[in-house]
Length: 434
Image (cartoon, rainbow, N blue to C red; front, side, top):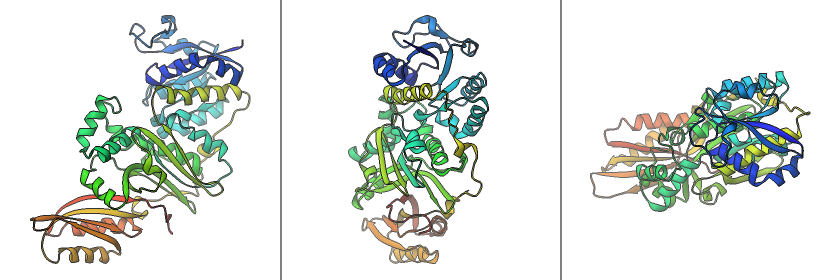
């Protein structure tokens, strides 16, 4: 049987999943690509530390040169995460004419163009299906299966940790801090959960998806980002009363060469397919001008789901080693496309205020919204006879900057106790500039 050697950079959760899949699905892999995939080396910091069960100790090395100088190793699989030294290792592998598979969304979101440019120079593949949505095959679907489409919108639940938290808050009616602690205890959230709960992880993934779909090298810093830390049980309650659920969404839209990029909590109608995606699952909703609406759903993380995507990329490289496919859309940005400032985006909005219970307060607030050309679709008042009460507004479709200016002025009113929350509403009935 013909063999091909690979090296693993890291043997944590994903690396362990890759190892397991290569062994438990060995016959299927050979049948698919005609080669037995053999792990030649595994890079670790400490070769003496106890690792994944069943791995021969002689495979471990702490010296990256052992991998670079081994001509039999054709594919380097980076599953260590982080920017450095992962970036250095990948670029050195490419310069040594080794193909690369990576699951590193943060690295690709910040340095993907540089890495792909170097791969083009050296004539090698860089595959990265596992960098977005774990086991969901969304990258290759956009690159290949849907390549005949002009993409209008990509919208998705791209982070399993925050979806787990929001699901538990909705079902159990508990606060954010309580659910976060539970998520950490169960291993869904890291000890430092910042990347997840503040939206960085989802923004990294949206950067990659938007670059592919819209043919422009999007910079991570161009994605507007909000996390879920300000979501309160009362917001989830109001959402349910109004026929919505709250999800942290990554949203990318293009119209007439203008691209909209944002990650934030969103009111999603209960009837929308994304509303029924629960716990740690991910889902990506795609609209193409030919295919119309599609949704991809599955495990967004974990050893075997993510490992499945990595192994799929390894097999794709084996099959296509003589036919190097270059990510033209990422390598050569279309300068005629621009990123829309967040203030120019349009949506409907949920606004929750706490105000003093006095006659005329609602009228004053409604007048200030009107002053800034923000039309109100509905108003809910909760509480009566208390010193302060909640007011909840849903606006009609309007421009972000108008809402922000109105709230700045409303917040100066003596009767306003607190601006409780502002959450965007994604009804899907209108698109940018409609």
